[in-house]
Image 1 (cartoon, each protein chain N blue to C red):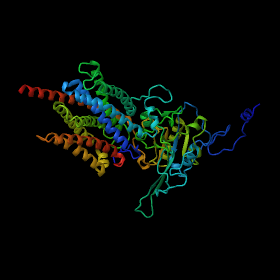
Image 2: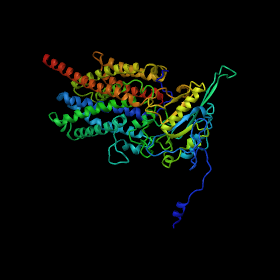
Image 3: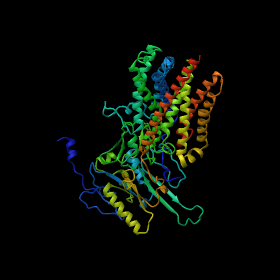
Image 4: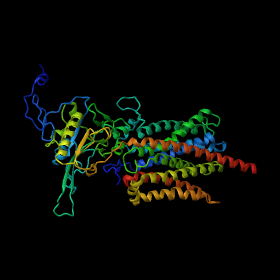
Length: 296
Length: 312
């Protein structure tokens, strides 16, 4: 082992709740980002997809926050991450702690997602806040898009900012989780909105393809960055290696192939989205399994 | 006069010296290793620490027992269970949320040699390092981990919500969850320090392997001891964590007889935040790329659909 290998690390036992939190966090951020981008740069035919994105994001956010809280040793103290429990009502924030940063992201993004959700629920597809000509709606969409990207990506930074082999060895996890999160968010939207106008579907598929290309590059850079640690914890660990192979084959190669088959059957589009979602889940499982084991 | 006042006014008769407990009015002799055998004086606001001289550790585990006793820590497997690990005399195996001191037994023998010539048996009482730049304190999102007025690192159990980020951040693998589902580690006997007392482990150590005191004083003792060992020809002896180069200095530092890896210690422990700039920067770059890719996808499809409608 290289001298930088730390022989005395302890694993935090971040298990299935955290895998699910990271996975649904990516989907949530990616879904809002896709809806916001269509809102900001799309056209009138995209209104249905924008509405659906706003409708889905907040319930997804509640779900992934629930996963995070359930995983805590003391779930009722979840608010200690937002407020100083001994100096109420002072806020709790450490810019250099990704988990503290993530708590603020969840709070701010949660507020934006809630506003958009209420607008979608009460005002229907045309929206009131998010109506085509409303500049305030555009500002909310822009803030939400940044928040969505931050939610998708911060989990990777959080894992990077530790002292465990694999997690702290290669600094590409923030970027990798961000691309994967946006990709799974778009795939989720595509899966539910597959009967929407074909132009919207084409735009989203095109965007998802770009995300998968970027994700592939980030994944290669992450794996190369592991160096000797990777050969011990991934190449030398067949179950973890198998998970990464699933990500590459099922999560990236198969959906690409399915989307580029000429005159493909309609079911292939849905299958491609399912594969992207499976890949997104297994990617987070594989990364967390690196030092912890596949059973987590 | 109330009973309370009567009791408060009582003065205790002089007590016989036990271990290195204070004896008022008596000068402090030195042990053979240079450690003070008498009381250690320190004040709030003054950084204190442990200097663990592994060359005189005899593996008696008095420190482990004293720590468990004072801090009322339960046995790892419950009161009616014990474990024989098969690893030398080490049945504790590691530090944990309920084991704040752990004596390591390192049997360095050539198993192929039936006479065991040149074998060594190293012992080391391990503990939280109370780093001056502490990774656990850095990442803790609730503010549960604080630095005390003695420069030690302390977990406030009633604030901790059990997120376990500190476990992943500690470069020494010190912190684990305790039976109350919050993070646990050595408190440096904060309650004893506040009362002017020596931490239980150092108080109990019969060979002065664990020395307690103001950090500057400990550094002088460590330097003198190292010089003595080098004069004796023990050239492999070295100090671990004495200098600021290692995480700003470890408030629990060691005298080792071999490379840190022999004792299961990292050669070059680092702060988790070393990755924050690179990882955060790459994530921001990723966000910009994702935004541009999204724009490109929308523009491309808009242009192609316009062409299709023009052609029609």
